Length: 64
Image 1 (cartoon, rainbow, N blue to C red):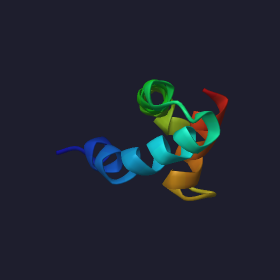
Image 2 (cartoon, helix red, strand yellow; image 1 turned 180 degrees about the horizontal axis):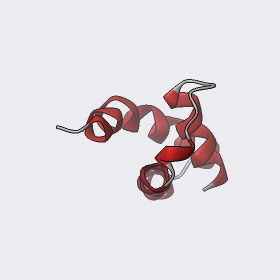
Image 3 (cartoon, rainbow, N blue to C red; image 1 turned 60 degrees about the vertical axis):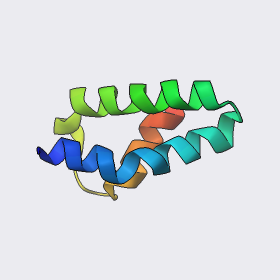
Image 4 (cartoon, rainbow, N blue to C red; image 1 turned 30 degrees about the vertical axis):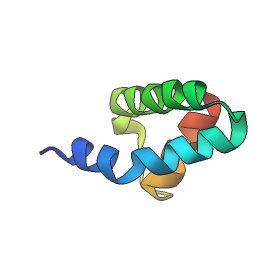
């Protein structure tokens, strides 16, 4: 298992709940959650650790 797999397993539900709280749409929340992790994987080199991974993922989700 990779670090990214672990990060997904540990944070996907949190990101989903955050997006659902913004959209109140389960299908959209699922789609945005997947997009969030896709973008995170693409840009993991930009994560500087100035905030927690959860905060960074939620910021990506907000902009997705």
